[in-house]
Image 1: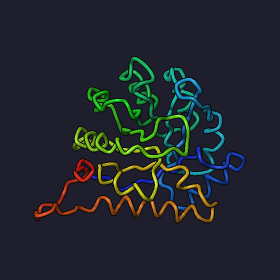
Image 2: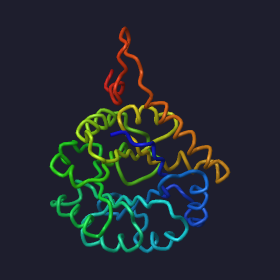
Image 3: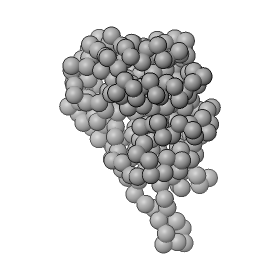
Image 4: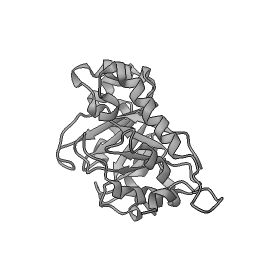
Length: 244
């Protein structure tokens, strides 16, 4: 199943002193979703914000809130984030022993459910929960801080997960170091949802629309089938990422 490209700016890179204005600016600039990185200083080595901040900014936009929960334990906090206005709640496969139970709890709250994988975590971790998922998030940096460099080692993982998803209506999201320069490779590997922080928020609000558009255009270009050398058969999405 092929989804349209989604660009989800991460507000972790926004100016927190003007957070409402920043969200309004990326909304006007063409953001499809608003990505909210929640960090607890325990599961990841940083603290960002919690459910109260999400509740406070929820009235600023009608765009979907894509809430990435980098916290452990996660289950005791799911209801609070659901009530705060999360539309999708993504938990880490590494954050608790009962992933299937966490996903059931998210669905029971009436929200869409996602799973995130750290760079060292195999895609096999989601094999038996695929049918409970609306989204798979591949971390292309080690979670905890914005502004890190993209890990190209994750392109093959993205391609393998795309094959695992098959025709299921599951979005494949990538988060970490995504820019206009690597968006094509990410999309060619099979991702359809791109989280970008620094690459969107650089240059001030006058540049947000152009930054978002540049990432989207690059990703869409990466999805165009390419001919293999000496062959009339187009490459499938993700094949180019596996060629060394």
